[in-house]
Image 1 (cartoon, rainbow, N blue to C red):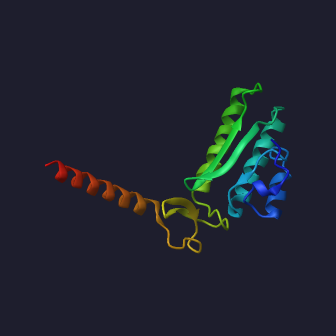
Image 2 (image 1 turned 120 degrees about the horizontal axis):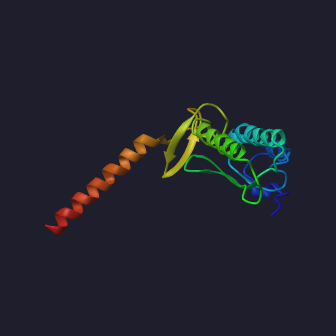
Image 3 (image 1 turned 135 degrees about the vertical axis):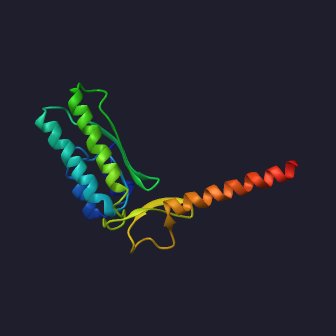
Length: 159
């Protein structure tokens, strides 16, 4: 499917054009994340392109690039090509590094941030964009206490 129309993407027109300037992404994928991750995703794409050019390998097929549970998810396919194992591992490492870096990059502005939760929705945001969200650890502790309380209530009903 070709994504020549920006309506499938969540980034600004300028950032859409920047990302779409890479052959790896050109008219092939929607960008399902906010503007703050543009440089992160652009640099990942550039690194993959450079690696494939250097090793004379075909570019992988990018299937989806999105935010999920507050961090970057970058889905790609290399099954139709013969990649040397080192190239396959290098692509995997580049993607892994970008996904890890996204957990400390505000999805809105690109500044340093952390994964936070607001109304059960995970997002990585900086101090300026955190709003009423709470840290991921606070949220998980709150959920744990809620479930422990529910278990105790059920035990009381059974007795």
